[in-house]
Image 1 (cartoon, rainbow, N blue to C red):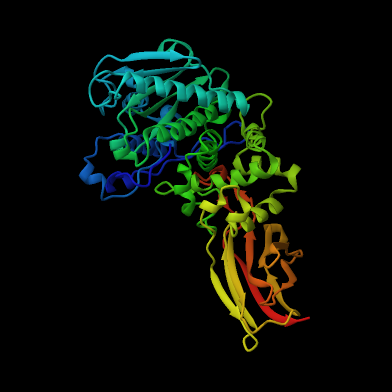
Image 2: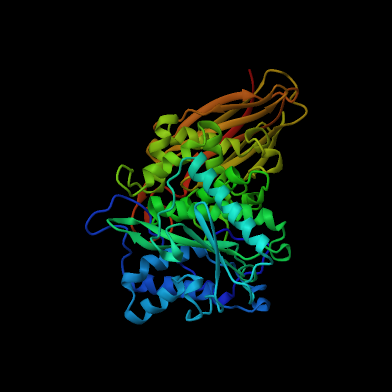
Length: 513
């Protein structure tokens, strides 16, 4: 689910119930390690979350409170929780997972209260009502929505080659993807998709349906309605595609790639830039696989897949999903393992992630549309002079994260022989440390990787004359993908990172020669 930054958000009471158990991917065994332990507790939590987020919360309450949890992923988790609920809770859950056309029997009133209409074209059927708050503004808007969804299908399935959403038999009238229009903006929601029925013989594949806002009113979403429709259709449809790969995949991969897909289908809209401050462009110290249930990290990290696709082609993301898929011939791997496996053909994850971290310090020059992006902040800034030639610090870096230090030459260091000696004493090589030095010079940007030994130590010298160099950034990287899996967290493989809080000692010295 795409979440708007500017809309009113859900009540504080809901925040306490908003912990959604993720069920990441991996090869299934007996018993399946992806099945949550102490299932009744996590299942009831999933039910409470969906009850809260679909509740009719007064706008005066919403405006003053914490952020809404993920609708698409909360619905996914409730779908997973069904077998672990008792009969009463299971009945309530099925009502919550029901389609709007299942009617006013929904205990929270999320079903249509009047008979629905349907319009089908190509691969998609759009359902709507002519009255009540859920009614779209006109039949023309229904046709606009239908065209947008078929255009997204053509782009994501036709042009980019992803698996099409699994058919739902005769649910909604036929096997085509069903999309329902409802008033969602007042709840702070663009739209969502939910898995509905498991594909026979495939535990982690499912058909599903989607719900989109009925008009994307500018007053609610802060953008022209057609723009909001296009990016939401691109994002939510990709969730339906993901259900045909593995609906139980790690949540950060689900949301980051769905937000990346907005750039492929609605490149001119640029709505996903609103999330850049929360991903690794704006917050490099937060781990790449962070799933922030009351924030936006997973949306902001679409830039990682933008970095990969701009260098290795757009097919690289499809390759990752193929490795993560849970169907015959797919890789049955969880998110970071799938990423690591694909990047093995492109120089490896460590080198690629180091390059990504360096690119985020100079986004204007690193990304096609980077002129409109922020740049990664620095953890420290130093200015070295003839009477103050050295500086030192110790910095901790979590897994799949980085920290940056900025060093400037004082104007007195004009001799061309001045060099900056960068000395790093990092963690052992087994924990995947890395570093790169980025310099702004009169000849443009220059990047130099720092070779670290098995003991994590490495040294490099770069130009530092004030005549030629404006600044030098030292990027310290923790590229670890080592996890202790299946602890019911929202990180990769429900795991705990084995290499967080790794220490780097950094010393920079201005030297001549």
